[in-house]
Length: 283
Image (tube, rainbow, N blue to C red; front, side, top):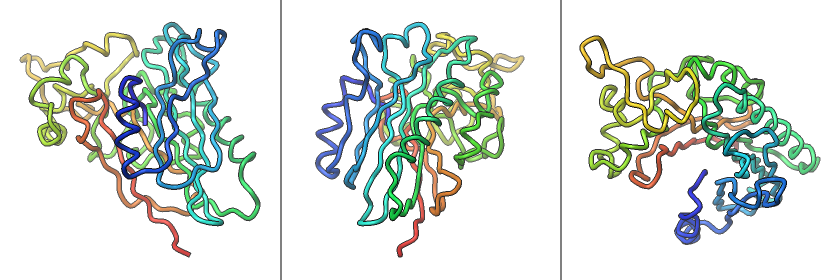
């Protein structure tokens, strides 16, 4: 999960009622790393014991991101005595502009994830699943994100929402809300936001389209494009900028049995939370 720092204590207190283990306030706070300013925005809550944790801040960052500690958080989780799981949570840089920032950050993430597995897995341990999740800050359909859509990370991990690079399944929706409209009454409650998300036209008013040519700060205030009559109409990429993902490693024995987009945090974040359901072997 990616969070706003001012909400982390509330999140921790809420999670602690049902979840025992939390990793929060993640970052590399050094003068040469982030000028001792801002963290990564990463937070993990888990019902199972966490056996190992490692955070790798991204070396390739530009502009404002040099004051943040964006990176990838790797965890080894104990399911039972000999069954473990790996979870990686990353936060990519927004508004990369013309530079291939996110491509480099994915490469750093993949290297860190594989190194963490190699370093922490014991011969007798059985990995029942391995996932990578977080705010990737690019989608699978926008032409400006074509390079990252074809990154080698996707040779090792499966995106259940993607049919192929450049095309998502029809049932998917975007996860990046239009920031200037996220507090409007029509999307201020979970039920209201849910109705907007399933409406292919209304969704475009509140969720960014997957037609991004270049990631600039204009994404924070842009309106949806219209047809020749000035109307917002249904488009295959409309309201489908899906930047938040959960990926499953291809050699994991677990099977994907469900994927969801949740409206539960309506009014609290400019992201739509995503969920992944897995079927794992019981023996």
